[in-house]
Amino acid sequence: MAKQPKAVALISGGLDSMLAAKVVMDQGVHVEGINFFTGFCVEGHTHAIREKDRAKPKRNNALWVAEQLGIKLHIIDVIEEYKDVLLNPKHGYGANLNPCLDCKIFMVNKALAWSFMEENGFDFIITGEVIGQRPKSQRKETMPVIARESGAQDRLLRPLCAKLLPETHPEREGWVDRGALFDFHGRNRKPQIALAESLGFSDWSQPAGGCCFLTDAQYSAKLTDLWQAQGSRAYELDDIMLLKVGRHIRPNERFKLIVGREEGENRYLEGYRRRFTSLHATSHKGPLALVDGDADDDELALAARILARYGQGRDADSVTIAITQPNAVASEVTVAPLPPSQIPAQWHVGS
Amino acid sequence: MSAAETLDARGLLCPLPVIRTQDRVKGLPPGTIVEVLATDVGTLHDIPAWCRVHGHEVLSMMDQDGVNLGPAGDEAGTAPQGIKAGSEICIRLRVGA
Image: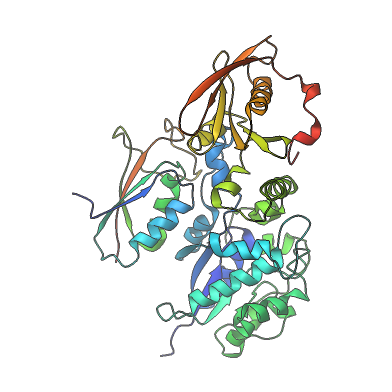
């Protein structure tokens, strides 16, 4: 009896990768999922942080998809390796700081390395790519680039648009029937939705921008500001996490304030008080703020005036603000809240 | 029943607690009890979901006061009533075959 072929499917948590995996599974192929965590993923973190999102599903969509398909899902931490993809994209960026083509090449390459490891022994890789679906990475001319530069070559199968592409190894081997694959193209989602319904799916995630913060203009502006302020294009996980949280207000190049916008964000920022100088009002209710940078006493007083503007003392003559150093040494200042007219729009990073 | 393995994933946001759990469980013999400490309420859904797709068994989910938080994994995937963000969570699981 012939050995059952094995494929590893890149599972983002969205509809296309779910369908791609399913149509190959339905041809008798053993499929397992793989999902990469770059640090820039939208869901999960933001839902966990923000109070207003607490009613929204906290499910990890990639895991949810794996459950719907009844397959294993392997989630891989690529935070460190991904830095080179973001900082040095060979194929450049999309509309914002999204290196989508390099990202796809990287992920297929990582899946290839993982899948062909001796203990895993997979035969080919599946993605949910559709020609014309995304302006940067999913175009007719980028499909062979991804296959070639990832090293996957003809072991990369895109079931949703396979009929528009050259025959691949799993098709030639007879593991997959090309006639049962698809010719989807363009940004129209109707064929995918019709296929989903025909396969019995009634629920799926549809994250705008492909679930990556790097496609977001505001987030990209904050990341650019971070790099400019520190004088180098580098980051750690905490840096990029904090860009997802709070108002970022930069009065000058020496420091910025990160002001919690609601209770969930304040709780999240609490976790960073041993790393950053923090401010909170003691005379009125209000948010917590972190000071990122090297602010002198005058600048901390300015920071206190800005913070006072965002609490219940915004209309008071004065607000007392506690300034706590990372070593827990605290002092207080009493300041007049800064009027909105004195907070220039350009201080608001990414908005 | 004491845990043979304890994983401290406090302060990490999903999916990192799941990734750390996956890495810790890899190579452990079936039947091993693993205790995961976390603070992200998302773990109440993600770790059981990860266990289900890999054939592991969630034995219990408690908060820091010993209050039972399970079973999670309801259809909506919303946070259980009463659990606050930042609360400490302890999830015990048994490694499957």
